[in-house]
Image (cartoon, rainbow, N blue to C red; front, side, top):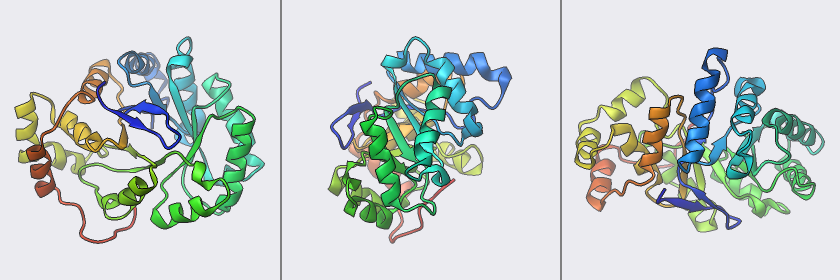
Amino acid sequence: MKHWVILADGTAVPAIGQGTWHVGDKRSMRKQEIAALRLGVELGMNVIDTAEMYGEGLSEERVGEAVVGIRDQTFLISKVYPHNAGRDRIARSCERSLKRLKTDRLDLYLLHWRGGIPLSETVEGMERLVEAGKILRWGVSNLDTADMEELIRLTNGSHCVVNQVLYHLGSRGIEVDLLPWHREHGIPIMAYSPLAQAGTLRKGLVQNPVVQEIAENHRIEPFQLLLAWCIQSGDVIALPKASTEEHVRQNAAAGNIELTEEDIRRLDAAFPKPTKKVPLDII
């Protein structure tokens, strides 16, 4: 994979990883999902993102099965529920996630979204987990600019290495102030749902004439173009989900696509970013 992103602690990770929302929900998909995840790692997409919320642990269990024998080749991410993010409960939640994932440590642990527990308490809990060797680094998810400003002012808050938010060609609100803030502070963004959720919005993206024409020019699929666009800045990591080996191969190949300045200009014109601050998109 040509495109890599440097986390705030200096760790390099591939710009396209693997999302696992709904992975593990169906027993009938077990073999197919495990094969897809393992193939993704083989093809260079070693970042695997899950959460205790996904299927209430089912996703973590499926990921745990998939990484047996290849754990050291992967960069495992999980996320803690906000109500479990207190200084004491976070340790118990982390232990449960580690057990389901069949590993002794997480490469990255994220606060899934902001809840009622003070950020200072969550940071303290994260730092204790780092000291204990249970996690190697920590970050956040679904935090907007004001939240991030508050976070880095806290003791050890600057240790946050990433913020995972919704971002794709049809949802560009973070480009108004959140993404520029992250660039100023050297903290990359992880984009979940980089292809938009299945439905009207995704259909509108992949069927857009500009998207289709540019994809045809590069001899790629429209959704591969969406992935290539998402990571083209060099400081965004995309986490698409794939349940079939063919889709995994296509996602991995998107990490080698180079868009031209003209491609970017045309996509910007077809899907302009907002002109003012908008609420953070969350699904």
